[in-house]
Length: 477
Image 1 (cartoon, rainbow, N blue to C red):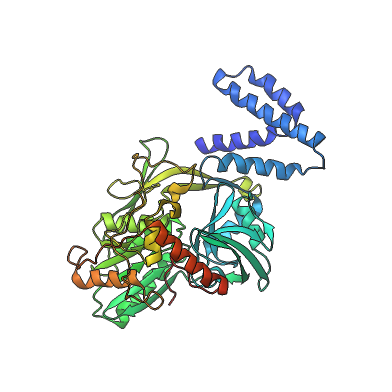
Image 2: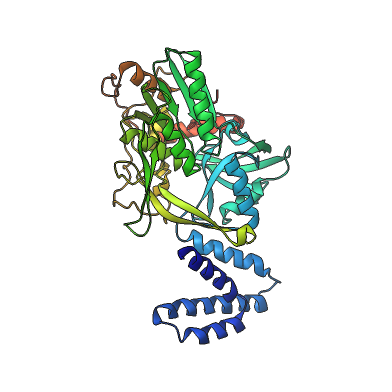
């Protein structure tokens, strides 16, 4: 009944925007309705009057359809960064993405006060190879500004025919804006890469599309078949932007022997939906370390939080993104009128922690690079769910960890270009049996001046060519 009512109200709103004449009629009808709705009807009438005024008096002819679609988008995006109205084209593209194959550049983006901000490049894609980083701003596409555009409109600017080049203008902290030329490809990223690391296995999951659980399961089985004496596994979720909830539950299920994975709670505190793992641990109880960073978001945080809470794995890296809200996609007329993507609940880990804004904190905090350590220590360089002004609050009222010097960072003698420091520390944890038993390194110090110097140095590299590897991303196998 609730869904039917919601659908009815949406249909009603579409009728209200036909023009001032319709508004007058609706207003007369509204006078007989209960007072709590009077203000709503008045504002809908106002909307119709404004639309009618624009139609008649704007300096150039207007497209009513675009105006109304923009209004719907504005209404939903004002709620939080993840709610949105999807046009029929947007809805179709979203379905392509969740199926794990689409044309484009391979960038997960969001809107930040009218600017297009990168959440994460997808492994192996043109954006990843070009060195685009989490936290970068995309200011223009082929010389045309994208400032003020919605995320979906910005995506449309970046997509096009496969094989054609597109130039993105990138704004990055402490670096002059620079152009990156990319060639569009069919984006069919393999969700999982795997390899042996001595006596241990390494599995990287890049996103939670429809293939995530099956590919992760196959990778674990292959590693165990090739090395029956496998001693443990590093599961890499760094810069994984998330995806489908059922895949998050499915992936966590591979490591757990039953029990809760995650719960979600909506507006009604009594309405709690729990998702549980089935019996059967695909690793047979072998020790696991999960790698996370500030680009680990949404479904990836569900898995990391579940394995941490259930004492199935220890986490190494940096505090995750903090995207702990649930979006429900509601097709309108079966998708013919697009869809509404609206935040309907918050995620909670098995111990009852809210992921929203706060993120998942690692058991051993390790920066991937000395530059990243400086970023963590300075508020100006923070990028997370808490960075958004209209982000949904954490239900518990908790706040994200403040800027600070991370517990560990690569020492001066560590070659950051050749090695993966976070991975090496994860392997140390496996070898020593736990975070507690692993010898700790001296805590680094990081200042704003150091961060500026490091960014300036990286900027010089970026200007020399667009192939500098991203800082916050695991290297593909």
